[in-house]
Amino acid sequence: MAQAQLSIDLTALRANWRSLSEMAQAETGAVVKADAYGLGVEQVAPALAAEGARRFFVAIAEEGAELRRILGPRPEICVFSGHMAGDAALIRDAQLTPMINSIDQMLRHVEGLPGHAFGIQLDSGMNRLGMEPAEWRALRGIALAQKPSLIMSHLACADEPAHPMNAQQLRSFVDMTDGIDAPRSLSATGGVLLGPDYHFDVTRPGIGVYGGLPFLDARPVAFVDLPVIQIREVLPGETVGYGNTWTAERPSRVATVAAGYADGILRSMGHQAHLWAGETRCAVLGRISMDLIGIDVTDVTGDPDTLELLGTHQSIDTLADWAGSIGYEILTSLGARYNRSYTGA
Image 1 (spheres, rainbow, N blue to C red):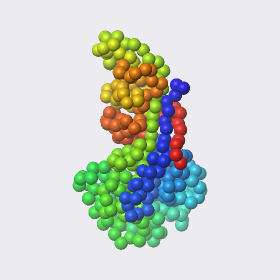
Image 2: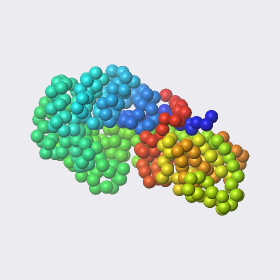
Image 3: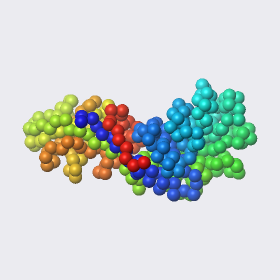
Image 4: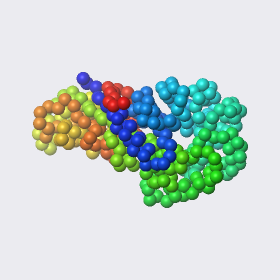
């Protein structure tokens, strides 16, 4: 088979969610936006629901409608982008909970869907989404009279525990929400790890569920194996790949694998990336191209059929470091060409 293999371990995914849930004396939701971080919301969301998640978070209403089809009527589905123009029918029919980000969204919601559930997103200092303190003061009484199902904000630097922005945002969130009789939520994965002061009533783990940092104890969830198409002998002085960027300094065996940047293997990681043949570490040679990558298998015994890109030897964050990126981008970049399989339930 000349198709790269992406295997998703749902048992590990559920274990990661459960571990993060056990860290907080709070309800634990689950973030499944961007097709469950690229791993397949059709399979991931039911696994998390079976583990106990009752509140899910998506980016846009269209994702929420798809999730409702998958999960049925019971879980609450919160939409981070709020109530956008043209979303009323989707929000109503799929029974979504938009996280209102502005006075304009609040007016759109109460006029278009009176009595329909909603939440509030506050800007505690990230300057991305949510109502700033002055806007919230103007709307607070009206909004609270409509009984929001959740009031949330988002931490900008939670993956850096010592960053002063964390304490600053915590103070701001408390100032804006103290005394409110509605569930509050401040923490995604990084916030959960910051400790109980940040947990409030609902946590929203995302990347840690999928095996990424800053959750150091996360079990790997995504495994990628690349099939070897051909192995050739390369003599000293010969080059590999576009631009002649790698030149052999010794007699070498070069495997060409069937994957490339069209599969989400970022070109920027090529100068330091490695794959694994069993317990042998094998360097990527030359440039990563659209569909093919050259790999040094000189020190491998025999001819491997596949080489491991993601798995027990290296994580999404290992690949992210090579690419100057983050684990989120690695996961969400995984393309549609993989032969996907799921283990566990």
